[in-house]
Length: 319
Image (cartoon, rainbow, N blue to C red; front, side, top):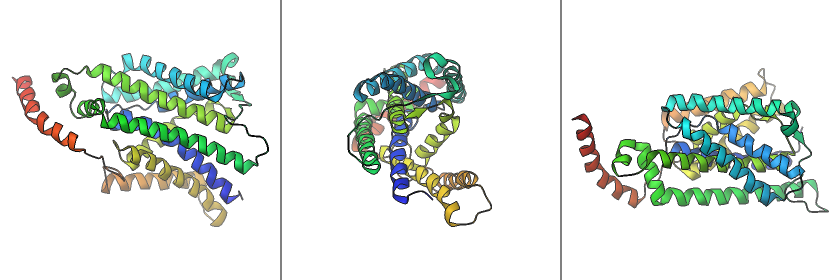
């Protein structure tokens, strides 16, 4: 049986990393309605870039920045053709992208270690004389420092004029274009920013685990992040982080049940069933998530101004 305190601290660390992934998806889907089902691909890019650079003895600040930039750049390049597709085709394309990138790292043994991955990744902060529990607390402090920074950035974006344009695009792209906004450019920039945050989460994950392999980056990672956003509440950054804690808590608690209760089910199957029941319950009875989107006074004023314009544009299009 694992040490309960160490198990809980490890769950807190994972929740922080996945909270960053949830924030990145919330920026893309919650605010801009971009169905990015390839989130794991950019998470993997950040982890592998960080793993390679950490083994070359670069400091954490350097390889975390490079991992974010590389993931954001790949996200930008990917978005240029992918965002021209409809929402359903975009989702399928991004799933395929994640699988293609996983095949690349599996086969490029000279760079990414092939199917064995890369190991021996040093932690970002090394303090001599600390116990294992104290080193874990240092890791948690680093992870949550990055999480708070990402949260603040996402909140500033959401409350800025840029964020209001993203919400307008989410509600009606035609209306945003009628106001002279370059919808494609806004979508591409948001996709790149969300990918960069995913890359930073991947860098934290790599140095925390100490090893990366292609089998850590299955499509189920993307689906878990989607559950976090849906449960917490789309277009609510606090809800996105809350969703990460809820899903991670469900995953960890279902694994512990086997140590206390004799169950006829495998813990992994129980985990899937409990999470599915939670998602179904929230979608049926609270479709806006645990925390609904916050409408600011500026947003209300903008909606009042946009409604007449929206009616005129619709009339013009129909005619």
